[in-house]
Length: 225
Image (tube, rainbow, N blue to C red; front, side):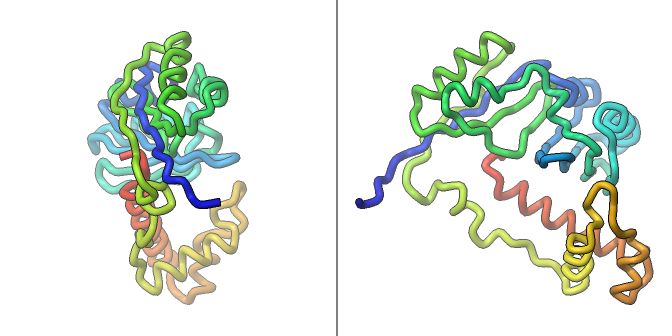
């Protein structure tokens, strides 16, 4: 059977005041991007440098913050628990009912949860919107049709691997393999540094630089832009 070039349909729904992270962006004029995992999440925060500490304190109280990389008003943090648990009410049942897909990362800004959604049929997005209205104060931020195979999510990621230095790749890969990102951690940065043969501060800096490059690439190639 030949391949059929079926367009996909995309819409961004803005849910007002829906959850802890949305309210946090309203209180501090911040922007948050969230990548969810099974047990903890990766969170990217952009805000005024003077608001970094109070926002991290609020985040730590709500979801726990295991680690954070701070560069002025740009923060990358690893949470202790799933941050989406504070998104009440949840959107999952609405998505499942109408056969739609939520595309990561989730975005939070201006006191709203921004959900970018894909569907194979435009009618499914319309049905999802009507369903969301039953639980949320919602509006549609953008809506478009994605035509052709060049718009497939996998194609957007081609050639997107960031350029890491040899030492950045070495430290980051070793941290991943040795369980530095596990909860609880299976190895310390001092132990990793000893394996590589450099001091802890230098190893930590290589790790942070690698994390930032990887996150920036993920943000640039994400369907949520």
